[in-house]
Image 1 (cartoon, rainbow, N blue to C red):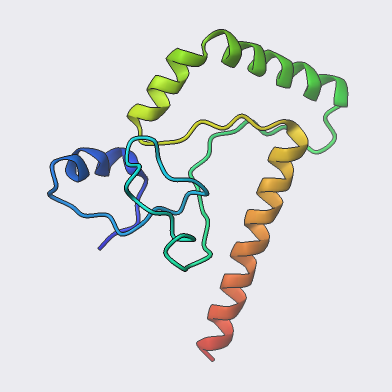
Image 2 (cartoon, one colour; image 1 turned 180 degrees about the horizontal axis):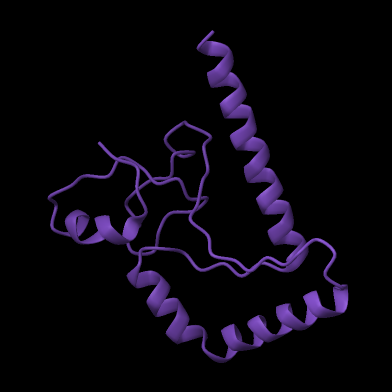
Length: 124
């Protein structure tokens, strides 16, 4: 049993050498549409691999927006290429704006804090 990013597992899942129970994504993976999410399986757990760009807290909004606009333009101009590469890693593509990405990170941090507190309380 393992919990891993999908890229190293994908060939083994395709060859049926491994069987997946579920994925921690919000939505099913395009490459494995038959594989349920943990939420669908009755476990409201979500955790995803993500790649993002962060800047220091006091970075001027003008710089943040310029970076965001540049990354968004690159994605839009190369969407098919990027989607294909992301799909080859068994990932779903999502492009979030600065506020939404920040809220996502805060939400993940809160979820992890809650789990750690529960585990620490249970171990006493």
